[in-house]
Image (cartoon, rainbow over the protein chains, first blue to last red):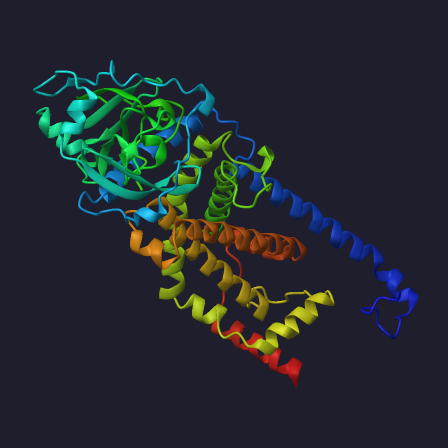
Length: 257
Length: 204
């Protein structure tokens, strides 16, 4: 088919032949220059950088800086949006660093919650002790660092009520958790004292089911999902940075939302 | 500023693809590891959260410069629909000479405005999905967390679309590249007037 862009009057072939080398050289020069700058661009972005140590430590340094910025952005009095009970997802979404089939249920009657660190009363807790504290319920959004989210309904004592009850040093920096599934975690004290930070023992009005952390798990409305350890066995109040399972692998520690 | 932005944009886009792959928005649509920055989600995330500072700081300097010096008003406005149509027709006829690189044609103006707005929108939607509780008002304004997330993804698609056209055209008109590196010819009142005359001459 004849191109619609072709001129109606064809120029003299002699003129075309005359200009052909010039056009070709222009094109070639442009192509070389173009590909050179594209190459420079690729070099600048470090597309081929396979995480050398210097890059890694620079990124981690910025991540720690971001932890500080996030702590500043965190408003201890701001409440996360809550939702009607009818929107609660049943059962909740299961998520862990292993498959749901590999969950090892915890025996609620022999289970004890150890308490250590900067606290006055280090007696271990039973599930009945936790049930005896004033209970709070909240229907909040769970947001995963991967991007998915769902609405869940959680009940239990606030972590603040628990910390006050054991005479914890509320000016300490961190609250650290140990769990039955070997998933250590830790949070800042400001978030620990937030009214929407619960030691959850119920989901949607029922006792927490095994895959979701029975007998007790942490649920915070102001942090990403991976900051909420399940099957908690020990709580420590400390000024020494305790880290956490995903944090050791490079994920940000503060992870506030 | 342009090259800081170019590098940071590529960092943000490719690390964003790494984060996206952990929980895809479009079922079955992944980015292969060749295109992702960071060898898994944690490092893509760290790249993204490091790059954001450079993007925002560089962007703020650029916007301030553009508004304070009047560069945006002078170079990006006005856009006349007829000129846009004419430029598109010219381009389809491979008339992309771009004689005076200090004056943008109508399509360039339109695309530059779109990409600047997209950049701003990426920062806003990014802030919303980074801190959906602290900025919960912004999230509900955007239609919820998942909507904000899709908007953030769509903004990326617009910028990548722009990038492809932008880089292709810059390579076709190589003299612009040197101007981007070295600072380009001085834009004087005289050259603006000449360009204006030239345009008038065309239509006459």
